[in-house]
Length: 121
Image (tube, rainbow, N blue to C red; front, top):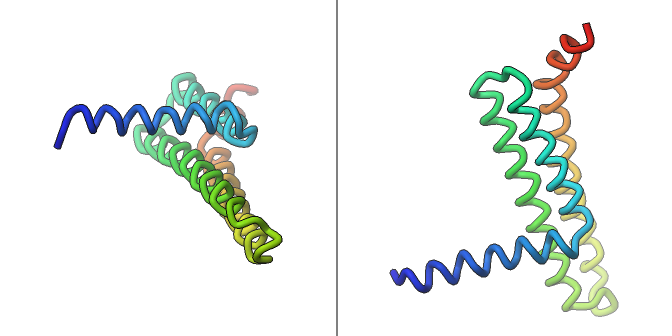
């Protein structure tokens, strides 16, 4: 294994993140939501396992959005007019991101809601 090759891999990965951040609105929204969630882990006295779950959920949602974006770019190469399944594939990937995000939201509410309620009282 070459250090030069490893560094190039990291450079390519960060270039992909930069592209997704600058050109994909949904990724930016999810990125900023992740930032808020991670900031809240510093504000509230969460248990270690709660923080671990929140980090895993943040990673899952962001990774799913990146997979969705990559698949959409790939599917666009095929052009929807060549195969009607291209739009179906894109819809299914968007649904996967939606389900992942809604699951993360539900778990986030379960973890954070008691802290917000205590804050209001």
